[in-house]
Image 1 (tube, helix red, strand yellow):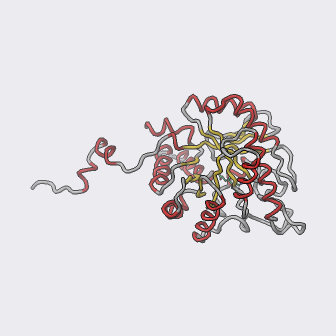
Image 2 (image 1 turned 180 degrees about the vertical axis):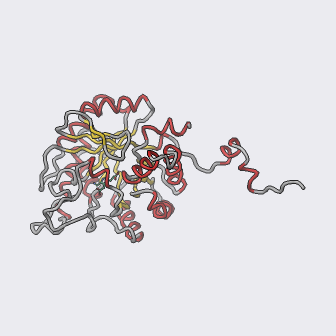
Image 3 (image 1 turned 90 degrees about the vertical axis):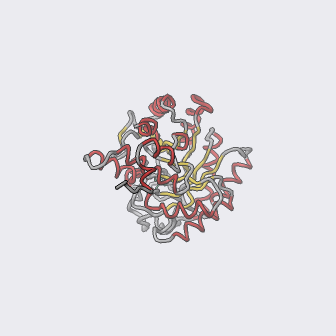
Length: 326
Ligand code: PBG
């Protein structure tokens, strides 16, 4: 009896599988996060984030040079200043590193810069606290964010990416940039950013975990609750309306439904952030021999593209060329 095949005909060998794939991941669509830290004397490893380091100003330039050789040209920079300040954003250290990167590499690199206060405040909250210390003051924080974004854009950042989740920051930043003649600076909003448990390794890298000493224990009063996709829609519509050029969902895999839904509803380029805990989860399994790490990362990235992302921010970007070939 002849074998009856229907759907399996197009799964029978790698050639036909290649030809019938609906989505592909390309290195061009990946952004590599980088950390630059004031006051350290040599680069430091970050638990769980294989291949990403807390860089010194010098080692950052060296790393970017190596990445360019490997075909990675797009970066998201996090600056971690050496001193903390409860009232001011302290953008000068990060601005200086932006200027150094752009002076050295010019338009060979696309440099996006995270805008937030969590690495610069002593309590690790993403903004300025009220006098009672039990609430992040929205207006005071937005003023500081706009100042920091302006400092980063003036230093040469191609894109500023506010990750704080205050109300009205997109409009305030756009106005500050346009007022200074920086109309070309791109605004990427962490629009659908959830109050997630998957940010652990990042907070070590950025020295930004919420610390004790204030009544505020976590970021639940400004980040989106995991059970509120409607809030993610409202935040994204608001940021699009206020002038964001690119919108983002963060984290990635646990919020794939949100990415799929929002990218269909809102006609903007969508980015997704495969956050530190997601990335580290795969790395830790791979280290135990439980999964093939590169293949698992690639599978996650494929899911992001399938769900509607055109931009993927991942700690694995600098390995992508190698992994995609395997
Ligand atoms: C906040 C910020 C966070 C990340 C980037 N910017 C999260 C947070 O601490 O709330 C997380 C990125 C990651 O986990 O990889 N400014």
